[in-house]
Image 1 (spheres, one colour):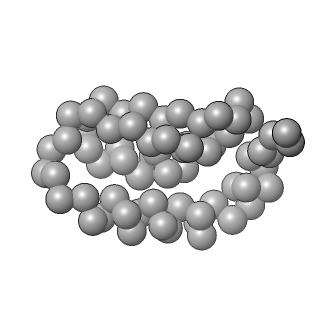
Image 2: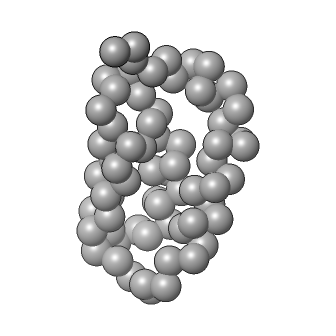
Length: 66
């Protein structure tokens, strides 16, 4: 199985991150304490979750390069 390469993925970082921004803006919890980003890639989507300053945030991805 071919692994992902984060460099070409991040070439369109803004476009790829926008869907995460849209999704996070739909979260109705005011103050989540634990968040897991499954398939987080290189972390651009996980960084969007930093607005929840009191939450423990974990990003995981199967690909080591991501």
